[in-house]
Image (cartoon, rainbow, N blue to C red; front, side, top):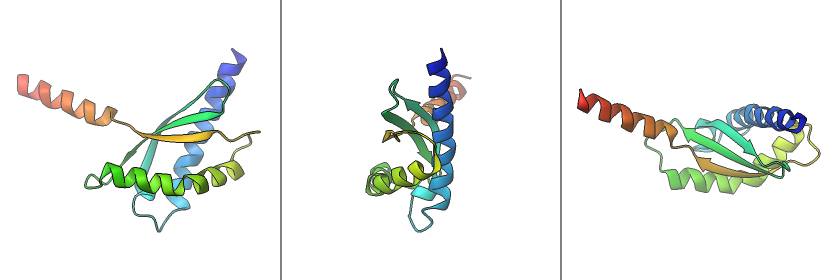
Length: 114
């Protein structure tokens, strides 16, 4: 129970800090400053974090965005380590969040049915 609370607290801290880091620390990057982090899921041992993101630029290629994330992943993790108070900063894995696209598709289908 207490461990669940600690994991949730760390998840929300990482989420908040990652959003701030991506907005402030990478002004010259093409895509990173337009990313929005929706959710962070930590493993039980807090060694890995799955980060779900979306981006505002609809014309952006998802592969190009992922490539830019992978280029700067080490620097993002280093900045995160200086911002959060954790013994070990988890390995970050960024995954594109498709829930908004799925919700839009469902909404379009419902409009067609009406």
